[in-house]
Image 1 (spheres, rainbow, N blue to C red):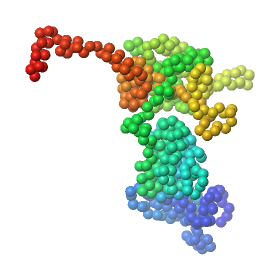
Image 2: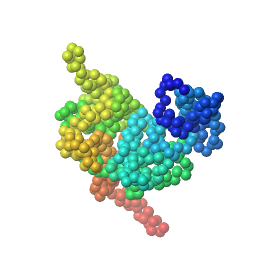
Image 3: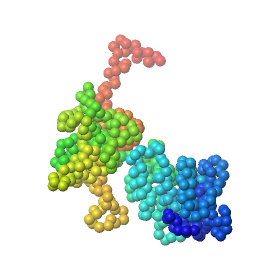
Image 4: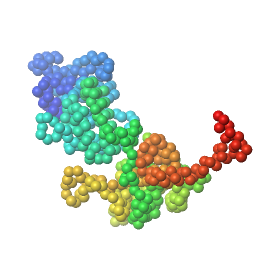
Length: 491
């Protein structure tokens, strides 16, 4: 065989040399000639593949064969057939692959089509998998090795429920419970996909029953498994005002109004950055501004997307913020963004400094250029206990150098939820509509523990309700009251 015109991967050449076959996956197998000096099929590379992909629960499809004289042509043909089988399979594979490393399965699951995912969700999933599943420090105990083996490098068929729980325990002790539950849910999805796509044999499905969450969290949070927001994760009103004062000094009144909207009207930061001066902001008959949330900005690109879950909603601005919003609209041209990006300063060929890329402010851009500077200027804004300054050298075990501040900008939504529940006394269902939560039950489970002064709230409610003796039987005229009481006694 002459020198190929395309490069055949070394792995394929080595595998064919050692074993006489290479499995492309999807039921496509390339075998080397049984008699290189012969004629016909015995002297050709043979491709075996299933005419239709095997779907779990259905009979096996018949194998077919095709031949190619050279390894170059066989490789091209096998690649084409594998691509065709991938399209036919629509996410299902046709062989058991228990020797594939768990990290490879995770990568293939991530590359598979997920029609219900939004545009930003894959970035979040990729970040979680990279940091808390595929990272080298996520290790499990392995009998043949004295040190831990990275979870991603262990064959998926050799992993047990105990191995996964070892990895989950690392996540649980290193990060917040929400990260732990999200990673847990992703691994469950990956294992179900691996079983459906023949990377695991059916009896391995028992693994799923043992991938438990922490029992104490399940008892605390009830059936809904919604994490209750701890009081120390919610900035106080005084800290919010110090934050607004720092924003005013550094960036002006427009940014200060934005922080007030985040803390007391409840839009997400991505939704707030997408607000424009148009019909989505209306002044109601009740004397308050109403905001329609109909889009959000992309995390890193200068464009907008539909809101979370593609769910539009209306929220309201407290009465005391009406004047600030009115001034903000007066300073903004119709149709323009309320909180635009100023763009980057660039010196042109004439030596004049001008700004480019102005307009939509991606959230990650706003976070680095605005938010982190504001919180750094705010006295008393707490740092995370595991924060390690990068200038101090490599972070020791249990410390990190990426997330410095305990309260991210999302904590202002917690401020808004507790303000609407505790100060305004709104019903949880109303708060859920304003914040875009699923239901009032979710709001109640998340924030009921941060409602202060149980006895004070009960006493205030009893004062508002009034004296029950002034209604019912006691509110009747004396003649009727006597007759009713006499009837009750006789009964």
